[in-house]
Image 1: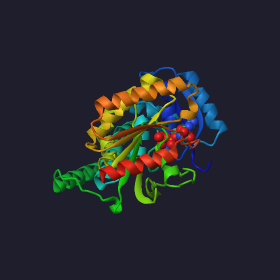
Image 2: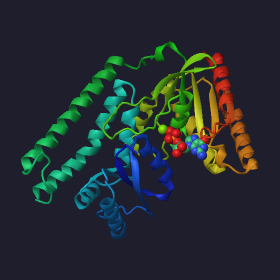
Image 3: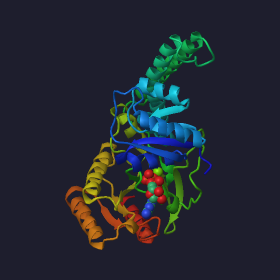
Image 4: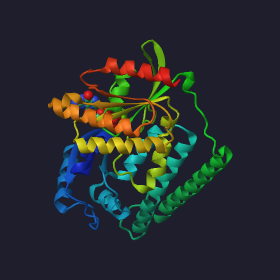
Length: 363
Ligand SMILES: Nc1nc2c(ncn2[C@@H]2O[C@H](COP(=O)(O)OP(=O)(O)O)[C@@H](O)[C@H]2O)c(=O)[nH]1
Ligand SMILES: [Mg+2]
């Protein structure tokens, strides 16, 4: 692994999601600490026991950063950083890092940068307050002035970006800039985090390098062309849907999904190994998200991925049938449903044929 090593702290239910999100950043998870419930009031978010588990993991491994996959108070983040002497980020911080990788337009980039500053300002404010009390060192060396100066320069950056974003929006009014994706039909690969989007993107576009990017490199090769049945098509690996998007970042979330609206076809990936109820819930929510970002009047391929993980044929058939039933009464444009395994190369040629068919119809 050439990615930086991090630790994650998460609720059990969020484990798969946070693994996939951290993987998206090309980071290597050196340890996971599962917490039972949020301790919103505690000074450290964590119990004393978990805190000492963390200390052990940090000593044994070469850790660059800790991600706590929950919404933390500035006080808690700072207490953790002070106690563990390591950089700490919470759920919003992690999500914003990923959005930054996927933001295509200048507007989306600015919006995410603005949110990041907005998220960090209270943290810095708290740090300044405690530095003045002598509890913490200043940012740019000892002495509170340096810390104050840092805070004020962040405030100025925030105001500047906010102004820039406003001007950009006014100039553009409500008109969308239509990107042509170089004149080729564009296909968005969408779905929840961990459904297998990046794996499919890599297979379809012949990209077989590992995703191991360092923490500070920013270029993400998320748009790539490929020949599908001798026709050149552009594929976009979109940011994954997240189960509980914090309200502060919902707008940015939609902004990072704007490539979907501009696509001619969407492949919606679902994880067929999940419970039927989860599969259907995710299908419904995904279709809502698609229409919210403006993907309307265009075809869709719903691919039930990871069928290699489903042992029971009846179970899989039932899921397929229920997904088809749902689409036939709820999706008004062209659609196909297909069971696949990207990892085991099952039905991928059929998927390519479906892509060709639906692109022919739509463009
Ligand atoms: N068993 C199985 N695992 C898969 C399959 N496709 C992807 N995965 C795994 O699912 C995890 C998430 O994949 P990824 O492509 O990063 O998901 P993304 O978050 O949607 O981009 C990875 O560990 C993949 O290896 C599949 O067909 N079968
Ligand atoms: Mg991905």
